[in-house]
Length: 266
Image (cartoon, helix red, strand yellow):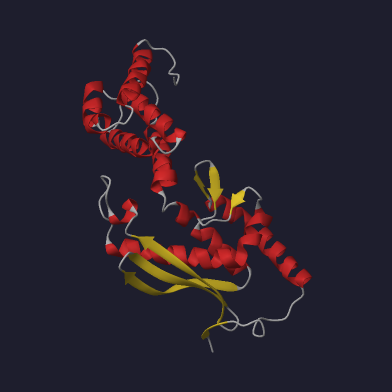
């Protein structure tokens, strides 16, 4: 019967190091393409997503799940488990946590609070990924040495360093259309979000600042009323630490656009 006790060394099936290595290599070959295809790019690096971690577990004959979700004073906590499918023995555990200091989930910095079910789900997702990481990190390296072993869902908990900047890039890709075409309101709204996201990260990462400037350019190129775009973000600009520098850079970029010259970052 399945056991809730974590496996002791005596409970783990005896196998040589060579056997374990061969099994890991086989699993890497079996699910490698899926792991790479579902990896998420954050700040220029690729991180394994929950889908990839679970695929690695299945390829080894294990199953990963979450349990014991609890609301704490500072956030929501969950425990992830990796069980052997053959007998249900728990071979690894990991903790997942979504803190109240994460604006992406609990609100703040202009972002709304996410629904409780979404917060609990993310805590479970992080817990599963952390348990899998503790068990199968070496397999990720076998699949691709450039893949990061920190779970993608943990990196997404750092919007000021990763998530917001990726939001900018996603919005820019969604919004790009050919010259002469009409931009839908949805696309314009996506770009407004891109500008806001870029502003939050620009003082943290150089990429954030460039993302925001590019987003302004995209909006200027495909929005009928450029002044409306600037007005929508006036409060952000007014709160800028480097207000003069930023406004000057935007003016130079918009001037290049008006002259139909290729935009170049200052």
